[in-house]
Image (cartoon, rainbow, N blue to C red; front, side, top):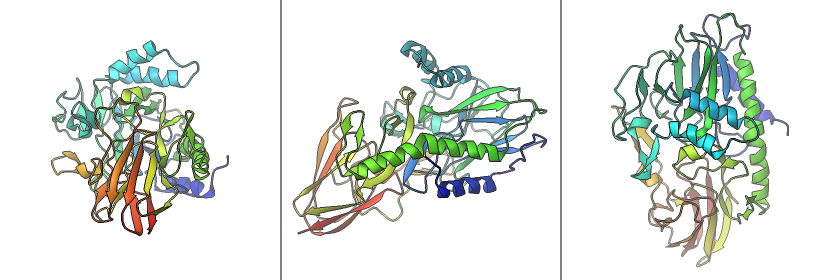
Length: 413
């Protein structure tokens, strides 16, 4: 499938805004390479959760700029000798066939298991872990095990490659440092591969920085951008277009299961819609979804339930407040999540205590159109949520955590 002209224009725009783009001859003493942390497509509302491209080549003394589009998904960028070798083996194994055995993968995943994620703990899937959400630069050791305790505050140092743990922390979408993390490489960093990942989305969102000697030519920023464009189109845009067309034709099938209309979000084979906190278990899947309600407009009658099929974690929400932040960062660096973004409000949400893969149909009850209401976020693919309207009218709905995901229900008497 060919790349759309609009996607191409966006890719070219990325080249223009990239910091310090090189000419590609490797002669510059210090350059910056821009890597995308996620991507929001212009043809359809999406979360494309990956690094674009996954691999980049740089010189000692260069800088890396990780740019985030903000699709509602939290990210960080995390390096470190504590897990570099294990993550490298995982990335190599996932790039070849046959896939590694469970034992081989588990041995390396066990190295990542103690590392703190931004979200999710024994206290609940939507609890912010300050030890993973705030920046952390350690020469030795690992972040605190207490999720409420951040790493010792430290001005971001140049990355030497010798740090045991080096993490951006949560990349904010507003305020200081909005939607980017810049990392200066030390002049004395040794040539080699430095593997990184997002601790929330796991090794399914990972990459490799290869540092080569200063005398070697490296790909220009234009080359990096084109590699990102190819990956976006091949790994996400093409399968998402197909899945969205299937959904609109009411033939969306994932892993042999039909997802009847209307659907909240569109997922597809080989791309996991985010459904859990055990990020180390998501290594076999890319993450992402089409963040759209299909159809965007639903017709119903008073007293007739409307039942959405969930393809992952989305909310069915009405009368959303005009200002609705998902995450906020306090002046002291403390990262907070808005509880209204994930908890049911005025509707019945998904019951607690279900098995991780147990699908459920929830009757959200009836609603007269008054007040802020939300289904909550804690859903898995295949769950269904039903709502009965008691008054005629046009009701705008949205997913609270995916800003472009909006629709409406037109209710007649």
